[in-house]
Length: 188
Image 1 (cartoon, rainbow, N blue to C red):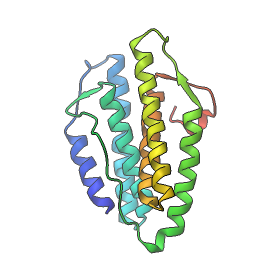
Image 2 (cartoon, rainbow, N blue to C red):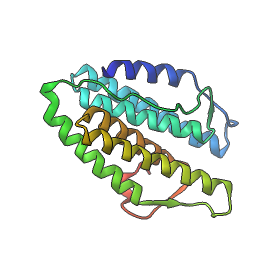
Image 3 (cartoon, rainbow, N blue to C red):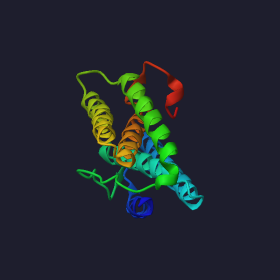
C-alpha cells in the first residue's frame, strides 16, 4: 500500500540533518532538496487523503529520488542510499486507467529527461564522475520501470519512473547537469 511508503519517507526525512555550514552554497542546495522532499511528501499525503493513490504513489517515489540524490551528493547526515526499493503497491482497480495513463506519461517524461541532460563539470573533475553517476541512477530507474511495465506491474513501474526523475531533477538543481533539451520538464 502507498501509505507505508509515505510513513517510511517521513521517517527517513526526519532522520537527516544538513551537512554543510549555514550560508554556504551547498547548504542552499540542501535546503532546496529537503524542501522538495517535504513538498512531495505533503502533496502525496493530500492525494492519498483524497483517494488518489496513483498520484500519491508517484509523489512519494519522486520525493525518495530527491532524498537519495541529496544523500549521494553528501548534502546531509543521517542517510545513505539504499540498495533497492519495493515500489509495489495496490492503487485499486478503480484507478487502473489513471495508473496506465500516468505510468506511460512518466516513462516518456523520464526518457526525455535522461536524453536532455549532460554533465556540467569538466570531465577531469570528481564532480563530473558524480554527475555521470546521478545520470546513471536515472537511466537505471528507467530500465527498472520498463521491466516492471513489461510484466504489467504498473505501480512498480510508476514508482521507478518517478524515483529516477527525482534523481535527475535534484541533479539539475544541484548544478551538476547542463540541460540540452526542454528546460520546462525540470525544476529550475
